[in-house]
Image (cartoon, rainbow, N blue to C red; front, side, top):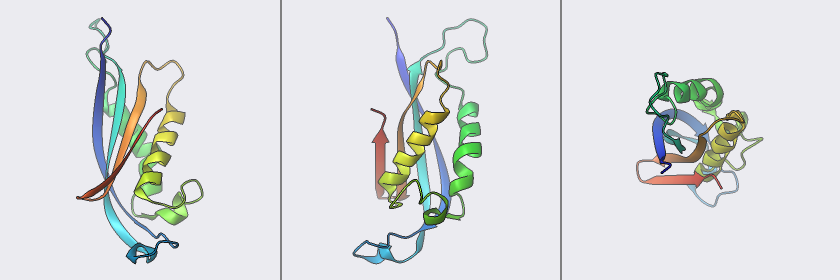
Length: 133
């Protein structure tokens, strides 16, 4: 029986954004401390003397992708400026979708795992979650 597991890791970043067409206070520039959870799905590596045995993906590899390919465009940035060209408007839903698309492009073609979902929280009470199709 093949076993598929889903793992996740959470990150945070601080950023400003603005929703200029919004009918409310979000039309003004403001900031959030965003919380992000990235989920990866795939088979558990069988025991066999390799570093990744028992894992779907090493969390260190996920950290490296976050640090190199996501965090620089997000942390202490104006999201309308840094990602607004690819992600407009910069709502939590669109930010999560932007992250998932970017991560999907970074997935090696022969990887047995995939990025399954990204959740973005703007506040402790609000979140948007997108899942891979």
